[in-house]
Amino acid sequence: MTPLATSLGQPNLTSILFFFTFVGGTLAITYWAARKTKTASEFLTAGGNVTAVQNGFALAGDYMSAASFLGIAGLVATSGFDGLIYSVGWLVGWPVVTFLIAEPLRNLGKFTFADVLTARLKQKPVRIAAAGSTLTVISFYLIAQMVGAGNLVRMMFGIPYEAAVAAVGVVMLLYVLFGGMIATTWVQIVKAVLLLSGATLLALMALSKFGFNPLALFSAAAERYGAEVLAPGKLVSSPIEAVSLGLALMFGTAGLPHILMRFYTVPNAQTARKSVVYATGLIGFFYLVTFILGFGASVLVGRDAIKAVDAGGNMAAPLLAEVVGGTPFLGFISAVAFATILAVVAGLTLSGAAALSHDLWTHVVRKGEVGEHEQLKVARIASAALGVVAILLGLVFKGQNVAFMVGLAFAIAASSNFPVLILSMLWKGFTTKGAVASVVTGAVVSVVLIVLSPTVWVDIFKNAAPLVPLKNPGIVALPLSVLMGVVVSLLTSEPEARAKYAEVQRRMELGNRA
Amino acid sequence: MTPAALKDAVTQATAQQASAASPVHQVALMRWRMAIVLSLLMLVTYFAFVLGIAFDKQALGTLITEGLSLGIVLGAGVILTAFGLTAFYAWWANRVYDPALERVVKGGQS
Image (cartoon, rainbow over all chains, first blue to last red; front, side, top):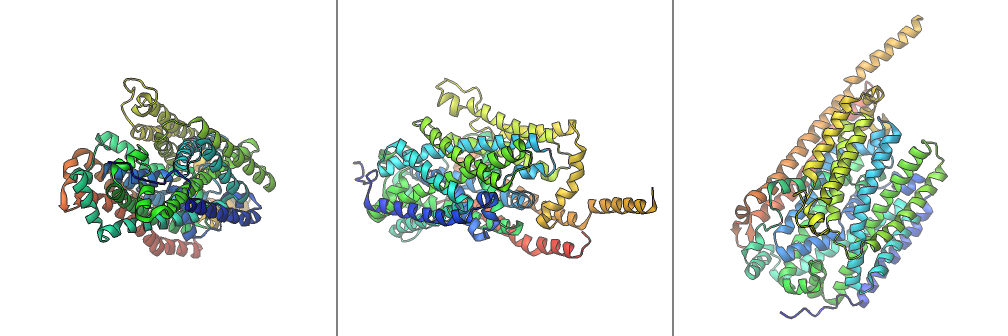
């Protein structure tokens, strides 16, 4: 089969036009937001004035990364059904966030999830541990995003990797530095609307070739590549591996710092609850659409043509856009993918800045005695530093296989952040030492296990056999973290934390009204 | 101890005791119970799907009708269940939990 004649990788007028319209529009929003950003609370949480619908879109915007849009469509296009396993996995964390986390988090905290823990426990050790795990999760997430950004932008617009990484870093930093959370929230909303409408339009255009009947599309794929495209392939191998990945996905979302932070941007727990319902609906819809896109690409573009452009299949959705809508539509989808990366990176940077400025500077270094002006200044300096770090990480990891890092970020979030949140909310006997032990265990065990796993030990370090057969550390790290939290708490006693429990319980339900 | 101080101490102790099982806590307990039950439902639904794939790939590859395998139906079903449970929780919290909490707060006996 001859390679598809594609204009992918050559800057075309529409992609440049869409790209500059997006960047211009979002920078105008940033200019407007900058004038409203005068306090640390406006900078980090948009002053708590975001509505439920706005936050629902912004949560979806924070979560739907280019990796899930292009990656899942690519996986479905090249291997069929297996992509659906990821779609389902990425979604099931959201109900958990809704039921267990959103409302108490909103009622107990101000800027970071460490606020929830320190409502009862000692400031210094808990803040250091929580900030450490936040920054670890964010670093791995950032590496994956920045390397992905460099590759994607190079592939779609034909500009060099380094220039692409620098461009993402600089534009993102303009949003965060000047417009803070107000600008970042609006960038997320614009991006979510563009991504959802772009993907829906693309799916409808693909389905129009099959009489708008998804089953006709699936049949066409089965006819061309065999009935196995509709059946599970080799993605899920052993039951233990399946449960391990499942645990990380299911409880990881509830421990992602940039997602948790969004609940502080709404005025109260009811709004937080409504916003996460909107987000779940939008994200679920998006993943169903992505599944259609993958099948559409495999039939209308063809697997060989997709793999010829990118062996990983990541260009399936943009190529489908070109086939059904020509170069202008390719330009639009490429610009949307770029906007997607920018928005996710901005959200990550802001949540890292909150951990650095609020947890470490305000509460550890300055022991809570910080003026408004200083808080804002430190948060801005932290954002700038993280922006530079993000660009450097992107450059350092150029050419490395970093796909596993998002999985690692989820595993750490699930086993390091989620257990302490739940234990501190529900267990009166939880102590400071127990919390620190739980956080540290979750993070360290996750990182060590993944280094020794087939993903890193064999694929990256080129050793013959892995020291640990598990690909995902979830099934070991999560229970160990809970166990350490419980055992250490039982061995230590903290009457102050116990005494504060009743009050914290009240605040968990009533928030500011308590 | 003066009678006034004694009275204060008694009032405080009573208030503390009352707060341990106060109406706010009962409402809180109701919410946590619902939250945990729904979380377990989600967990069971999702793990049933993933373990189904791990244990019996062939069964999930069975065609229900042309172009549609059991696996696709179940996968889409898990996505719809996730949204359904979330929507149910929000409906329940708006209809039952919020008013119950409101009654307790307004009742002034919290």
